[in-house]
Amino acid sequence: MRQMRAPLEGHMAAMEEVAKRVAAAGGYMKISMRELREAHGTLKLGRGVVQEIHKEMTAVGLEHCGHPGSDLPTSQGASVWVYSQNSPVADLIEAVRDTDGAEKTIQQIRDLVGA
Figure 1: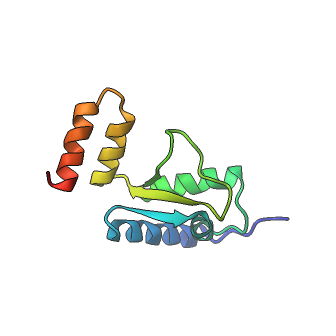
Figure 2 (figure 1 turned 180 degrees about the horizontal axis):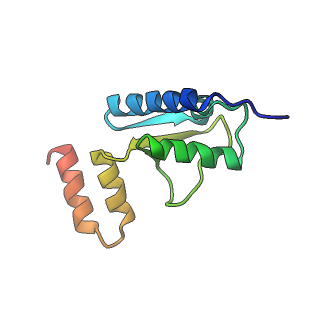
């Protein structure tokens, strides 16, 4: 069965709305794969579709939590943590992923919690 797609402007506009919601939520939020699939404009999720969704997310300044290079889940019932790439949360996530940046990570945590 052929998957239906929204026009390019339509699904990018929908993904931009997701990015606005993430920013309004403080730069990170949990979102269902169903919602990301709908923003992308498809009926089903699959490996290729989640790769396209990730590209669209990146284009609007979003990233998802997970191991670097990991794919988004292909189950529309799954949820993922999504964050804005230019947010304090992004800085913290990158610091945690940087195994040599323990001191930087601790300082960023202190800055985020105001300690």
